[in-house]
Amino acid sequence: MIPASFDYVRPQSLEDALARLGEHGDDARVLAGGHSLLPVMKARLADPAVLVDIAGIEGLSGISESEGGIRIGAMTTHAEIEASGLVQEKCRSLAEAAGAIGDLQVRNRGTLGGSLAHADPAADYPAAVLAAEAEITVAGADGERVVGADDFFTGTFETALGAGEILTSVRISAPAARGGSAYLKAAQKASGFAVCGVAARLALDADGAVESIRVGVTGVAATAYRATSVEEALTGSAPSAESIRKAAAGAGEGVDALDDFYAGADFRRHLAGVYAARAIGKAWIRASGK
Amino acid sequence: MEINIGINGESRTFDVEPRTLLVHLLRDDAGLTGTHVACETSICGACTVLVDGKAVKSCTVLAAQAQGCEVTTIEGLADGDQLHPLQEQFWEKHGLQCGFCTPGMILTANQLIASNADPTDEEIRHGIEGNICRCTGYQNIVDAISAAAAQMRD
Image 1 (cartoon, rainbow over the protein chains, first blue to last red):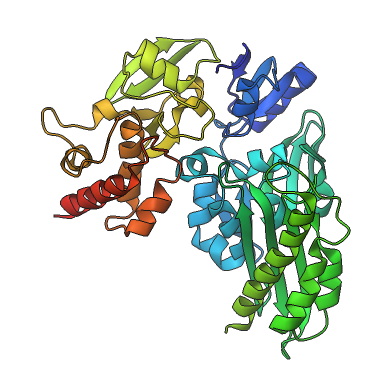
Image 2: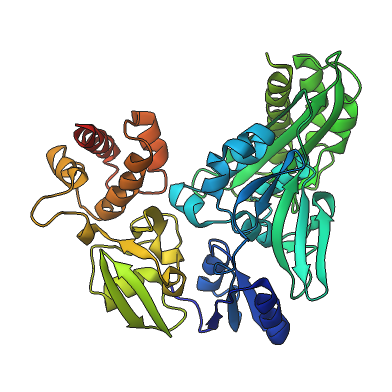
């Protein structure tokens, strides 16, 4: 399987890349690691006339500390995020989501920015960036803008990225003094994609009560979402295994779940509750240092 | 378009269409047919090669994306007549039946051992998740990788 013909450009600066996108409009697509875009092009589900490869642009890759949190360049690979001590320290759920993607070879090539921009409803990162309240920086002809994770995923394979824009980096805030996070998923056995993936990031106060918690769910619905009823039920009191299990059951309730040959909608909603309980429980244990 | 790629230590120049996949450049233009094509959907791992030391599925990489990179294929692993420890141990432990997945398995294992000199069987199994053996002969493949790691530690 070979993609349809296209022109390939490899600009050396962000300005040049944005100019190329502006020049070709809807006919152009941004190429990052290519592990979402190339399969789609090989299947002839997309046939852009021009690919703008952003691999040659300096500064789009790498992980650095930023105001106590972390900044991750869009071209940083899943393997780099999985292995990063800084990501493991600041936002373990993101490192776990990266490590849960595909296989070794896919993690060596696939990138954070590419995966987020592709917005596959069964991808792992959406749950993690929703739970981490990540800020996604996007560059366009008129300069940069920052999109909150809550506003980024707008539909199946649809995001807040506008025409001619390039996702450049993702920022995650500093973890709380007593904070913890975790990502767990039930994977489709053949593809490895999430049938249900849940990320939880929480902060405890001095008395052990939940000060704040965010729960992101992927693979269950047409778009990744936050389980806000679960967050509300757990905020303000000290959790227990029982209270987490009870609250987490709401993660799939009322959700218009995906339904396919591999997992029916009822099963997906059930999984959301089970995996929310496990992910929140793990994050809680990490936060409380137990 | 013209691209320059290092293949098994030799600098090469090719004139290719932008849509040429790395696996086809290696097989059809460079004549290195040890890299196999099977699923063509980045699932099976038969097309795995090393790009700058990292295992990648060459059916999902454009040749153009490998511009300026150093690619290692199965043909580049042996040192003259001296087989690489992985090749030797796949032979020794009977780590292949039909042999179709073997080049990909060996190159993935190569990166695995480079980053973890003494992997457990569980780590090996996790590491080769992206390589499918259609003969299902995984046990001997794991044994071969484990033995190669031991040989490389000596």
